Every structure is written in structure tokens, then in C-alpha cells.
Image 1 (tube, rainbow, N blue to C red):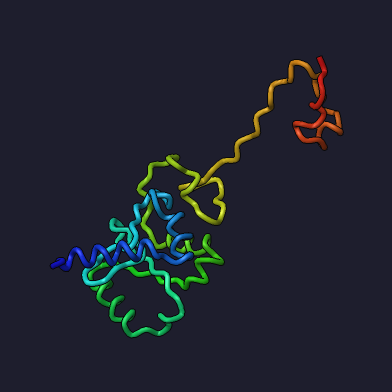
Image 2: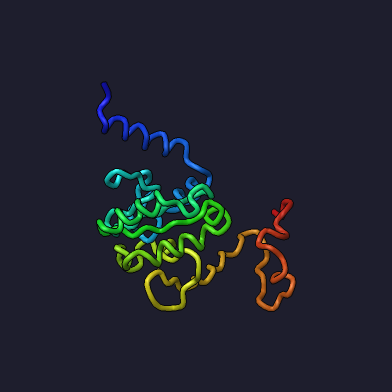
Length: 178
């Protein structure tokens, strides 16, 4: 006879396998510490419940719901139980996660404490949607594009050459010039 833990583990495994498209889209952005260095797990057991996504260190649970969850008494009881144990629960509609993934990620990021990453480490994914100014965590200074070295078989381009500005770097390089 299977134990309750085995049944629960099998249930969570089925949920991971049969995830919705919205869950799949959000998971691709949360997994592997991709959101500001926070570790999220999916289909995590929390007491008698299973959370869609959970950040254990921040005690944050993210739920993606379909229309069957509108004004659900079960969800209200579940959220109250989780809140009593120190968890914060964020709920998003599946449609919102599909059409505004960046907005959902920004909301999740705002609910998390300051990033555990050190300044500059993986800075490209600290700020999800909005671009940051020149200060603060996740701020990226735009890097100037390097000037490519001159091609050994082509004449040099001059700074006042209007055509050079309009053409792509590969323009004019066809054929044999040697």
C-alpha cells in the first residue's frame, strides 16, 4: 500500500507535468534563480496545500488561477491558513500571466525583500520590466559599442562618410577584392 507521502509526491509530479501554458511561461522566468537571485520551486507542499510557485526564503507563494477560482471560498481558507504561518500569497489570473508576463514578474519582484545577490552579479536579470536609472540595484550603464578593427582588404571608412552611416557593417563586403 502506498503511503500518503508517495501519493502526494505523485500528485505534485503530475501537476508539474500537466502545467498550464501560463505556469510554463512564468516558470521559465522564475527557475534557476532567474528572478533577482531568489530560488523558486514549483508545486511545493506547504502543509496540506500545494503551491504553484514558492520562494521558501522569502515565504512568498505565487498562484496562477483560472476562472474557476473566482471568489473561491476554498482559496480564502487556504490563503488564511498560509498567512497565519507567515506566507504571503500573490494570485494572478492565467490570462494576465500570458499577456503581461513582465508586469506579473515586476509585481513578484516588488513583493520580495532586497536581492540576495551582490552588486553587479547577474545584473541583467535583477530588474525585470522597467529600466532603471543610473542608480540602485540592477542598474546597468549602457556600454558603448566597440569599434571593429578595420578589414585588412578594404579601404578605411571615414567619419564624414554619410554612406558608411547608412549601411550595415556587412555592406560592400561581397565579392573578391584581392
